[in-house]
Image 1 (cartoon, one colour):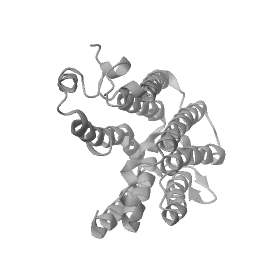
Image 2: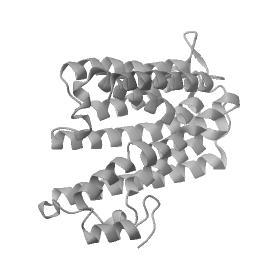
Image 3: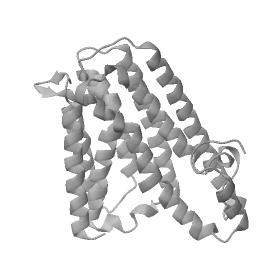
Image 4: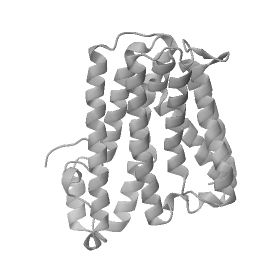
Length: 287
């Protein structure tokens, strides 16, 4: 990627992050004279830049995904510790985000360690601005994706949990289970030497081409529903969280990249062509 493009992306990420933090910080409690959401949002970016330094020095991407997940845990725990009143909603949201972050971080880290490297970074980890851009965008990803949960935790609005929260928990749990099962099915599929040159079309992968992404999107919809009653005014901007996750996975870094790689590998395979034609891209549908 050209240096100019990387710089533009960095600036755009910071401006977007600033606007999201500004909006979601309205009605946020204060911590040492600073809006708590603002503190957590800035911390998310700072963690990326601090960790970028050794990553650039060693030209390594091994801890990239782990740092991303750890950032979710860090800002969520900081918010829960610093907020004056921890209500039921805050506890539930904290558990949701932390469980998701722990599971996904461990899974992605183990995958990279097993592979020895992450092919996405083969070129960018040797280009300073491109690599910095990637870490900065990860900070933006954390801020926007966690915005609904973090806004509710740090909000001065403390309402009763209610039926919307219960529905949110059920939806989150459904997405969490779907994502775990799909990831585990694919992991076991890849461990089988006989599947080295095959594509997965068993289990949930016969119901959807990307069941793990479907689970991820559903999961964040659940988080947002739990957070919803605690939002007001500009804080409603945090409802963009699941929309952002959907857009990211279906239009940018998820499905497009995987589909492109799959077509290059199995595009001439009649079974793969049939699978692509008959299996939903995202939403689960029994075959």
